Length: 293
Ligand code: GUN
Image (cartoon, rainbow, N blue to C red; front, side, top):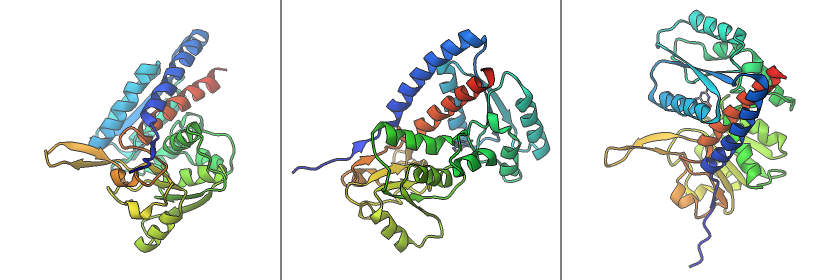
């Protein structure tokens, strides 16, 4: 039997390579400027998933030579206190990037919190100014996860021009900016979401040359929904408990079945996740350079 398995898009390896390059760039810059780039990482409450992401981001900073300033607040912090912290960080000359780990506890107004970050330090690319720049195809800080997806596609020479791209998920963090980036790269873009009827979702998915899923539902995408030869980008991260009681990570795609049909596929973990971190570090260094030169 000649089964043609999809090629894995190895985000882990690409992120490591990117971080190696950044480390060298930072060493050179540090010698010129006399300080290291600084990233403030704000976390509120004790969401276990957020704790893992924040730890990964801080570790990655350490590896490449970015100083991370962790700010961990109790879940009952007020909107005013959180905003005041951001205002201080905006003025701090040692800080080049400010990241607020999402989601925030319900009593806080997350868009309003992000709005307080000065756009030049918004290394997550979530401020309306940066999202607006993306919508207008102007230079600006691009959001990390969708930029990580685009970097993976570019690195593997996967052309997007004139392709049918389906993005499932319409969040401001991933779905919408990814749709805009694919559009900027000349794809024909459709965005599906929670109100897209399941039968219609299936039809749209079956037509997609590039299928990007950012929903947070294990096995949402099954093999019968995938066009043969499609590029499948799994942006879901789900924690599920196995029969052995151990928690493991899985995406939104039925990987073992879909890899038999797709041409390229991202694994979870080791696909898009590490790329989010790599782009965050790149954005921080770019902001550092912009501020120093
Ligand atoms: N929560 C899940 N992913 C992200 C991310 O990329 N940035 C922030 N700030 N919060 C997140």
